[in-house]
Length: 215
Image (cartoon, rainbow, N blue to C red; front, side, top):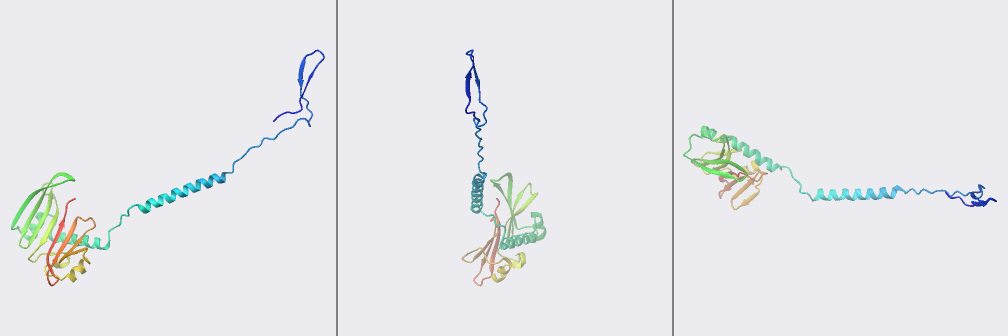
């Protein structure tokens, strides 16, 4: 605010004094103008940036590898392996109880890059049947490394035996994941367990092997 029209007067004694004329017409008040910015453009800019960030996040999610769950084939193989393991037992003692003393027994040291504890691979040999187990903690923990059937009456789960036609194998396990010459292969979701069935000229099972590789 400013004052215009102010006048200076001096008295007869030469003493100077100032007096402002208070004439209302001479007093002009200039209004103060406050500029308020419209927030809408700023809000629109923020909304646009948030939207772009959202789109970027969606692109990252779309590019990330999707961890698929187990398929029906995976579950079928897993169940088949579990049922086969139950047929023979969960340990060396169980196997010997079911099948009797083996014709030959071997124990070979085994080391894993992921475990400092000493392992053994125990192999039990029967006529037409070989069973290998990983053995840890002095035999307190054991699980199958391999079951191989090349002769005799031994069967896998669901009555899959030597001489079983491949049509029944397909009914039990579905179509093989891989066919190499006359060998049909299946594996579980982890990829550490593989089933291999060799077929003869008539399409019947000639030999069969379950191999489990330690991580």
